Length: 154
Image (tube, rainbow, N blue to C red):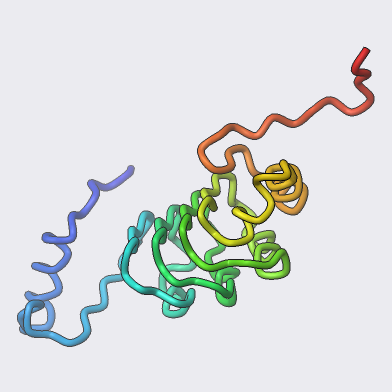
């Protein structure tokens, strides 16, 4: 049986009841439970740190418009299916390739990263990205079409 989704407001109320503190006055509030979707866009985040607590449950991470350059720690998100991380600072294939450590990743939004911006004009972005992440079914909002091997273009 799938439970009802918990809003942030409901989660904060539960946290306040459990700790006896007011969330508005706290310097740290930790909400874990069975988090499946997390949206952290526009927060000046520089790294995938602190996500190990949700690594076994998180299925979607929306972390666009941040300052992420290195992908260290992303491998902890073992159940991640959807990663929206447009407009960050990833600039090399070595860092991008760390996404291959995510066995469930099928939907990636990566536009606006220096790596994507460098390779989109010459048309190599989609081909190279999907070669490095062969399980992707959607890249930058577009379904990935895998060509049939051995097809002639006559």
